Image 1 (cartoon, one colour):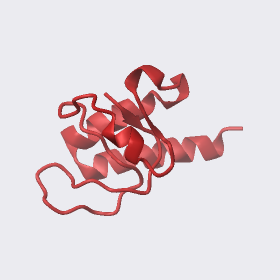
Image 2 (cartoon, one colour):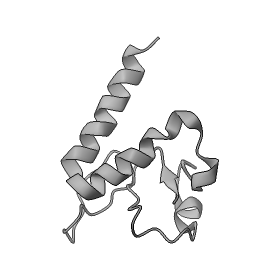
Image 3 (cartoon, one colour):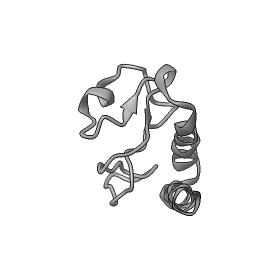
Image 4 (spheres, one colour):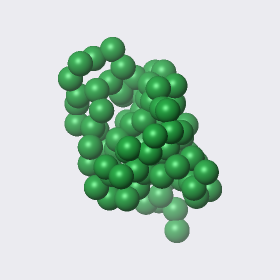
Length: 90
């Protein structure tokens, strides 16, 4: 499953046909077929094959899972929490 660590794109939340503005592109781990189309399409080179995800970005795999299981707000909260922690960490 590819993982997106940073993107300006948005994805429709689960069960919705329209998208909201999102902090990152969310990739549904249950729908991903490892075709790598998102890797080529990513405008900021932040999407990569699962095998190539650096350890510090593993959290984004969990964020994607939560987004599709618990919804847009839950995924965005995890991103916000991650970014807040990165800003407050030396």
